[in-house]
Length: 249
Image (cartoon, rainbow, N blue to C red):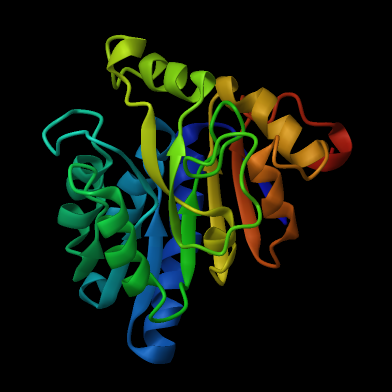
């Protein structure tokens, strides 16, 4: 695992976007298409803005998969991750093929349909973030490190739901759905390359727990340390609690 630290979110986002674009272009050059997994949330704003503006990416030959989505939330809701991806990635980039998780349909039918499409070929690059509770996708602690399923329905813990209110997606905790569809830990780790984007001081404790503590279901994103090709992008705020040895000082 490689950790890169930047002065601010904008420079972080541009650097991560450069690596992401290179991975996509490499896959297209090699086999004609690129398969990607995209994350959502406030932490991804600068990254996706930079990525969609990166020249030279043949987005018509990109196939995108959705990382997670709330159960029961409409597409029109401000917190809908389908809405987020359509507005911040799919439409601005002009992605040719995409598979969204429809939280308004029967979750098991959605899981079966998108999971089947996901299993058709390897994923070239996954873009992920880390939650304030250390979650990876919506795999809150203790995360399931063992299931081989592509997607599962999860119960969202209190810390995760409070984060969504804190980011402004919901006006109260009561509005935040209690269940979500999430890509599993093992499925995320199947990606050939993982780019993890984690800015902001509110993520500093989770970053320290995941990258300096034990690899454990109680710190779900700690599992990224076992992947052969993961790059973590931090800013000064999110990396503030890391040891000097880890940040290379």
